[in-house]
Length: 111
Image (tube, rainbow, N blue to C red; front, side, top):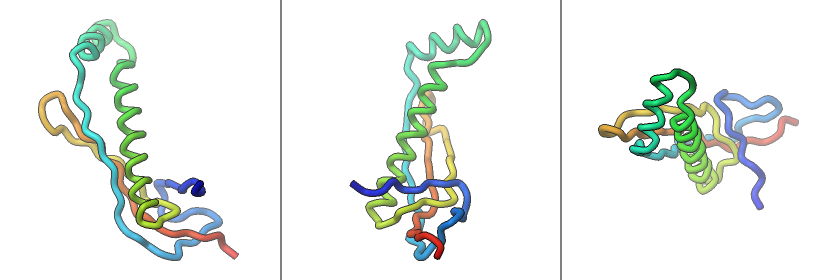
């Protein structure tokens, strides 16, 4: 089993040094809204409060995009991804893409 990969939004990792930059890695997912979720969300919007259906959908999308990015980094020989960011865009009516991207690197402990 491989050691867990370090994923961070920073460009440096305390106690580590980057010994090789592999390059850009990314993972994405495209999700569409569900009519049932839309109905429940519209009810919640009417009375106020968190729209739980969409919160859950976005959280699942974020994890899937991250997992795909990490898999690409590991396949390319990285043991860390730095500078991680998220982006989203509407693809079509009722569908959106969530993208996770960063720089795959090889790190080692500082002496």
